[in-house]
Length: 625
Image 1 (cartoon, rainbow, N blue to C red):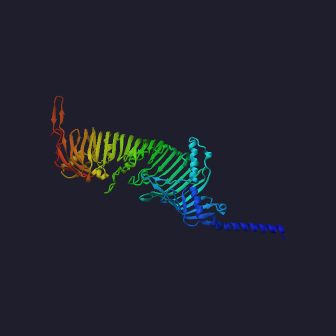
Image 2: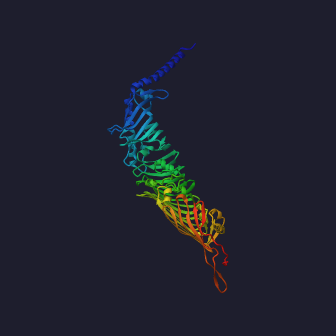
Image 3: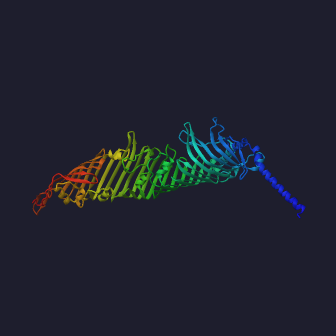
């Protein structure tokens, strides 16, 4: 039989359990009478420094976490007479201390904002201004930290930083909007994340995800001394941004003082440089994305100028190194510097700021120079090897410039086709519209290699020579440019040959006095002493001023027009025999030409020329028989 002491112990334990259970059960009822919304609003105001108002009655929960749920919560600036909310949330859940609640006090550590909206002020220059409170424990803690920094900026006394507990603030499905006289425009949506700071003098971390310009973005920030940054001091920071258009990271120190300074390692990776620019500043570059980019470097500087040192740059798989300078104190960002590559795709690089190739189909891509209004670019490039479409180049020196309506890409020196090449393309916005200019000077080159790269399948000079092309005209789009271009084309080649012309077969077909395709007599090679071409281009039509090939026995010439529209040919030409001489030991006697003059017409198209003889040749022997 149990002893009286044992029974009393059982009853005592049972009574304590009942008392604890009753106390726990009574907490919501006691709290509902002690923790009124005005008290919660007062504590939130005292902490944040904003005027806090709560529309609904707090809903107190005890399990699984002791919390109060608030509805229709707004935070406004005390000095704002209009009472426009700085932050408003459909619901706020705050985790409370049960012991403090029983005594009528509000002591919370964590807050969860459900569907909050943060309103930023839109400035006249298009930027935004973050809201700032004029009081509150958080603001006072920042002021104390600012005083600590001001007393010794070089080595502030970190032990003097306030150690107030902060906790964590979580936000779910929030928005950030910019407010102006014209109304509101949404900057961020679907914003979810958490700011964690156990105490103001401890390490802090922010993680957040949201949608910006239509793309999902994830951000992480962490610092061992975030309060130092808030107070305008220096502190280490690790930051990262991840999204489909770009990923970026920074690991270093930031000084938020009057002379704000940054020093650390940065990295940016984007699968498309063009897409990254379009996403970061909508409308900056119309058109399809081209070219991937990655940049890893040490960056130093202030808010007005950043120096990018030991930059490791990869453009569309082509690695390079250099030094860059980014200036932010002008009306638009300005980027200048020097980059050196082992290999480089020049077309991909240049296409980052202007369409470089004509579009297929009736609707050509518009050549848009609006990019030049949003950034100044001045880059010096070099590459051991490079490509421009199907053209291979070596030892390339080039420049890229973008500024105030001008977009230009120049190759000042390069080795190609066994010789030297200089080229440039520029688009310049004028009052009458965008004007475009293209230049090419190829000196001491192999004509056969040049013809192959240019896609010329008929009558290609083989030998050393020089080619010059100058085109300029309205730059609305590539078709407009080529259809209305003005300029000139010139080429001079020395001793060599013309590939794709069988002269005996050509003379035989003209003797038959019938139409024939140039392809039918393209199976041979004609030795020449020289080739010369001069043409004037006016409104997209090339007028042949001089086209002449000289062989040991004849002169072949062409004249006429070659329009760009329709790709047609309207040329006339002739083969004129040279007078040759026969020499003996004592005399030099003229000999009748081997071939009498032969005239012909060239029609058809660029890709399929045909020949129509006008005068049939008479073939005779060298002795005149």
